[in-house]
Amino acid sequence: MPANPVAHLAPIDYAVMAVYFAAVLGVGWGLRRLTQTSTDFFLSGRSLPPWITGLAFISANLGAQEVIGMGASGAKYGIATSHFYWVGAIPAMVFVGLFMMPFYYGSRARSVPEYLRLRFDEKTRTLNAVSFAVMTVFSSGVSMYAMGKLLNLLLGWSFDVSVLAAAVIVLAYVLLGGLTSAIYNEVLQFFLIVFGFAPLVALGLHAVGGWEGLSARLAEVATARGLPATAYTHTWTDMGDATRNPIGVEWFGLVMGLGFVLSFGYWCTDFLVVQRAMAADSMTAARRTPLIAAVPKMLFPFLVILPGMIALVLSSGHGGTEAGLIPAKLAAGGSPLLDSGGRVVLDYDLATPMMLVRLFPSGMLGLGLTALLASFMSGMAGNVTAFNTVWTYDIYQSHIRRGASDAHYLWMGRISTVAGIVLAVAAAYVAGAFNNIMDLLQLVFAFVNAPLFATFALGMFWRRTTGHGAFLGLLAGTLGAAIHHGLTLPAGVQAGVKGGYLGVLHTFPSELAQTFWTAIVAWVTCFVVTILVSLATRPRDPDELRGLVYSLTPRPSDGALSLIARPWVLAVVVLALTLALNLVFF
Image 1 (tube, one colour):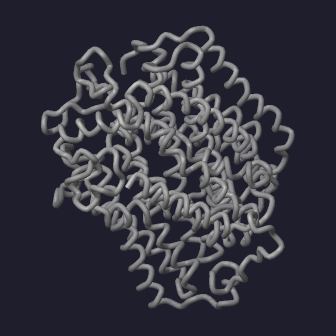
Image 2: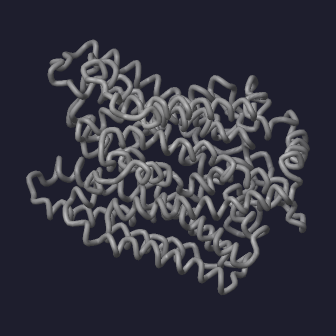
Image 3: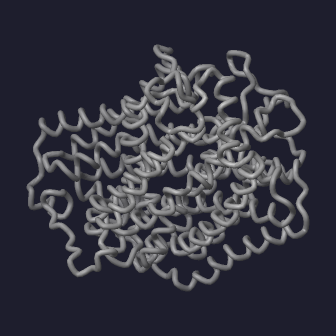
């Protein structure tokens, strides 16, 4: 990568960043005395109030994929990117809060894989633990890649040094304070991201003439690319035909692939976010955690997607191969990278960083960069704390060393934190093969979370599901994803890591469209195989499943709570507001 900085920071910018680094390390240092047992280190002692766990619930997801990835997708796909929130994340967060959290929290499981052991058996737990550990390493690596790329572009640091610096800082405060340190820093990072990016959106909209001016310019871009004028500014209008929207998928693939399989698979089964709710101080607090998180979450498209859309039409002023502020992705020799059709490949991941450089003055630039750094660290720390918990409880304690002292498992948690960071550094170099990190992450989720959601849905709501059915269903679902991905390819790319390695039977208009259908294939395969194998094997005694299956578990009583504190009331409010946003941008 080139090491020529495009921004020159003033001393005040460096001062803002230094204060932030001191604050996150100070939080870890201050909490180190509270981390005396493995429960303190991995689960925060189950002692945190719901507003803290609620903000941490979304902040753990506010990594590079949220800020850089959603900005990149905003530039690539327009306002349709908001489907990740208004069709995907919000309904899924309501579902996990109302229906799934009672099983996670009530069973007293320490992790999602451990719930699978209680519901099914050890082999299903181990399969999920290993796949989840791999996924968290990749996700953390993506955050490191984005941070290294940003610091290289803006400050001229080498990519290698940038990645190592980020790794050391996150490692330090997680080692000191464990999950509690990560959660309190995630709350700090949440507010930094909001206050750092809100001015960017305001300045960007002012520069393009407000929403009307942005819509007019995006209409010109859409028309030039052979799409309807509304393709980048309306969420549903052009979803009837895959050739009429930038994502290249029709409404069924979107709702089924993104809205149901990928989003429910991620928000309902990913231990990274579920772990934050499990740290709450009561069952009610755990159920309210994702519902509280859903309120700010539904507004995040305005904070992270709009900058990408603006970057696509805001002129850089010096021509060249870029589109708006978005530069071309460079080949190893420094020349613009071309796809198989001879078109310039744009580096969408740089959409939001280029907006910061273009619009923020000194001081504000330091705040904006600090907000970006906060998002990277939030994502890295979230994945690392989930990784060390699953490794220690679900792999090490279960298969390598049973019956050791609590101090030994606390020591192993710290060792695995170091190992997770090292593996994530290696994964950061793999992420460089994609020009949109969101595409890479969704592909990983399609392989891991999509079949897992079918397993959970059947396990929690159909008591006839057996351990053999769950295990073979998960294997078949992941294999189905690999076969579909290996036989299809996005338009304009060559066979390899992006698919087509078994041959090309079908070409999708975009990587995201390919991923949505890969997820659908994985989910359906797992769902069908799990049912068939379960019907052919012996189910467990119903008495063994009490508290683990919906039909055999007493419903939580909210009668003693005030109306506004009841989870279902908050859920209705959240869903009504989300429906309104869909209608406004229809």
